[in-house]
Length: 274
Length: 235
Image 1 (cartoon, rainbow over the protein chains, first blue to last red):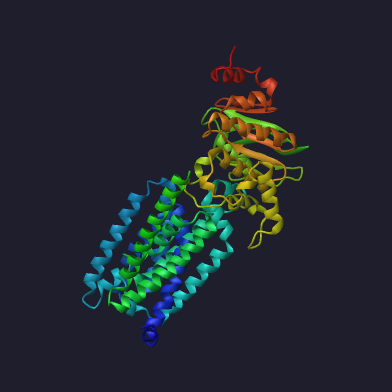
Image 2 (cartoon, rainbow over the protein chains, first blue to last red):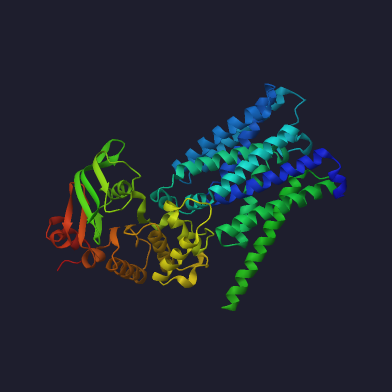
């Protein structure tokens, strides 16, 4: 089966793009989840859907519309959640559903040529060569920035007040984080669709936090989990002709359930050990 | 030797002054307590000293070899997520980011982190999980992190607001020891005990002015007497 997949160049491309996006999303996810920003990822993907709908309506190049709109939305959502300190979730929900509605109307006006299903749930077939190149560039930039600014991102996430006092420009790293998140979401939406992409950000971090207790280990395990879940989901979807995005999310869910059971067992054992 | 000197400062936000005409200085080896009611400008003072807010008027100087980002800041713990996955070493090492410029921490930085943990009796816990430590142990780790950031001066912002009595007195004990070993202490506090016992200098903010001077002089002022009375220490 594996050699069969590799004989289709579009499948190989999708596999590579998916791996790139999965790793980037999982690393960003650790910081986003810990800063209680996971809802922003979800909101951004809906905004992305709205932008895709509008680009279909106006017959524009999808990426050219989606990238600036999602980046702008990331800044607005971040500002809202920072200002309202946890009360931002209702504003995010409002923006999400408005963008979704706008997207649905645009797609239906644009006519039958537009595949609503691919927009919402992704489509392996829609990954073009340009998408592949953009995905690779975005992912490499994300990985590079994450490694170079690893300590600063850690300090900004762990204790912003202390980080600011030691002269770290925490605002700059928050902007970097939101910029990279929006790019990863736009690129990943082609495969997973706008409704499922946020799972790539949240699941790996959630699974890793169940298993590990240091920041470095959580980051590494999150990236590994993302790779493993993507590959398993991809092959399952090919073998059983299931939708790719949904299969990947289901694998993440199974991993999360296993990690939860593992953690509960370990806690129970260490309690009875005492 | 003076480490921080503020001259004729007006402090506040958005052009609106909270305190004006403030002059103070922090000397090497000092133990300064900053007290005062809520809203009197303590947190603005903290931000101004740390360089996060510019004073509206006046100047703040850092002298005696102290740089603005070399203040060992100890924030109110409420900002830290309780379930944050992090090892003790990761927390302590993040203290030296103000002087750190390469991708990895150097061996010298790791050694220093171990020494700071050792000084606070936490060397056994360097690879433990921060979230699993007790409240008092977490305070020690955060103190070690603050020490990583500085050679000279610790600046604590209401460090005991979440602590029980035993942990509080342990923390004060460590601070006195550090002070005795030559580290200058600045502490914002609502608690009268360090003011009574350990402080040398007091900076008191109120809605109608401020007091800056020695502890003995402070308790002769109206503000000092009121604080004593409200804390239940009047005779």
